[in-house]
Image (cartoon, rainbow, N blue to C red; front, side, top):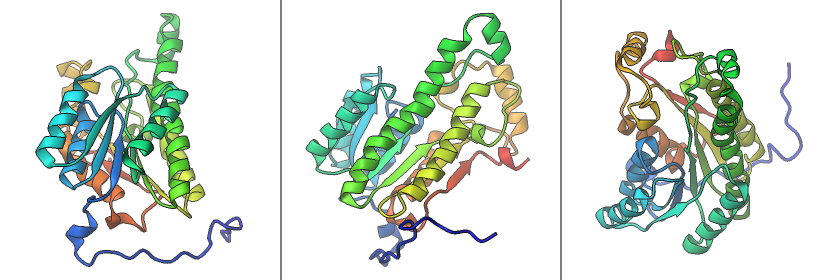
Length: 280
């Protein structure tokens, strides 16, 4: 089969002018980064790593207003501009207005990390339906984990198109590649699989002006898995070749790579960071 691209998608482009030193390629100095779901866990670890790399930051939270004070501490510690925004990614108009506010405040957006997410906690779908707990939970998970990514991409992508530059990094999951056991979470798995393919599709659509990639964490020690008891976590560990959950800090290199000039020829990619879970 011969692969062809629609007219305009494969228009020749000039290669970027890149720093000669590899450490400079990973620098985010002079860049503006947005991180959603930044109050704790993966999002906060990524935000701190970007601050260490020199980026100015717009960090988002939904209900955890502790991020306002955390933002001030990041700004003081790393001598960068950090502003916290309250924005539920499930509300399209709020997402649009917040992105507009960020552009007014910072002048541009170079990096957008769509990280906000929630877990499915209701077990098997049919049993959840029998208990009457399925629809609200389904809408909550899909609204945050899939629609929220769509809203962010829709308006961040418009900024990137105006600028003719940008990098979007989306938090997917190994659950978009495999079916987790023993916990059953069809909704979450479907949302994350959708996010991965959505990102690949956007990578083609935006190829003339911006890049889109995903990071797929495995089991990471964050608050999103706080509902899990010790017996279940031990089962997880038995299925992970490395025998443990990851730390949020063990993910930040993947996000920095996709955000920075170290990956200017990388788009439509997904990077698994899962302790080799998906290898088996």
